[in-house]
Image 1 (cartoon, rainbow, N blue to C red):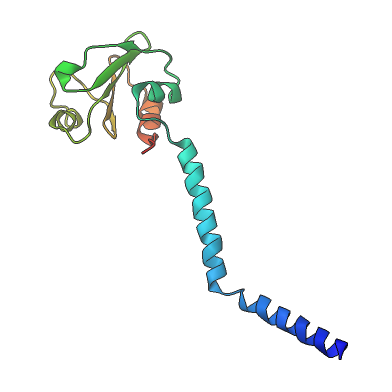
Image 2 (image 1 turned 120 degrees about the vertical axis):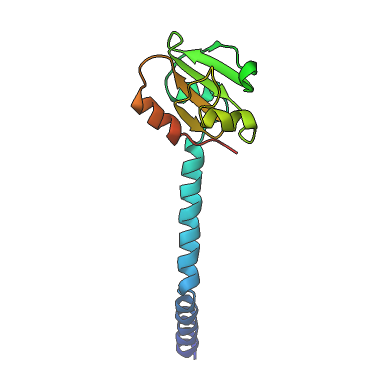
Length: 138
C-alpha cells in the first residue's frame, strides 16, 4: 500500500511539474530579462542638468554664461570657453529656433532633449556623438 501511494504521489508531482513548463514560463523569463535590461539602461541615464552632462562628457567644471537672452533656462561654458552647453525647455519656441540655427547669436552643433551643445572653435565629432547618445532620467 505504501509503495502504491508513493508511486501515485511521485507521478502526481512529476505531472504537476511538467504542466508548469509551458509558454508562460518563457514569458516570465523574457519579462525578467526586460526588467534586467531596463535597470541596466536606467543606470546609464544621467540627471537632466548641464553639470551632469559635463561630468559624463569629462568637460570639467563650467562657468556660468549669459543664457536668458537666448530663451534658455541655463548655460555654461567649458574648456576655456570653447565648449558651451545651454539648457532649454524642449517644447519652447526658443529651443525649436536653436534646433534650426535661427538664433543669430547661437551656432548650435548638437541637440539632445532640450540641451544644446556649441563649439566656438573646432568641432569635436566624438564629443558631439557622445552628447547625442546621452539618455536622461525621467
